Image 1 (cartoon, one colour):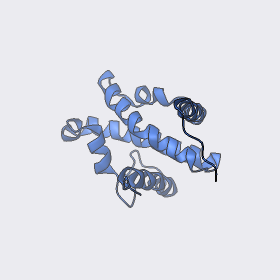
Image 2 (tube, rainbow, N blue to C red; image 1 turned 135 degrees about the vertical axis):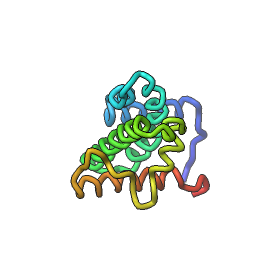
Image 3 (cartoon, rainbow, N blue to C red; image 1 turned 120 degrees about the horizontal axis):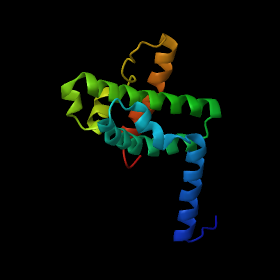
Image 4 (cartoon, rainbow, N blue to C red; image 1 turned 120 degrees about the vertical axis):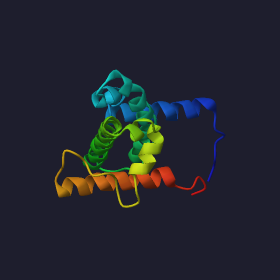
Length: 144
């Protein structure tokens, strides 16, 4: 196997391709915080969530999943973000919590939070599958 020395321009081209693929996959990603908000104060926590979700979305793209599977995970991530912002409004203790801490508190190896208003059992199971993937992604060993 012949290897080529990596240059900064090669890395920049890969990053640009990743960004272009992400923009096609989630064209409204930067609008997610506004779509979740109850009040303008919800925008910064929503932006923090997008910063956490973006590498995971890129990871999903790199897995080579079918478009339907990618879209399902994307939609359930959006739902998770909305649920987190909703919970911040219902519980003063959660409101004081950094969103990354809340995210780690809501995700478990078995799935995510129960969604309100209630969704069907099959939708909750699919949502939980996305949450499990995110949980494992966030908790993976850096040496793995």
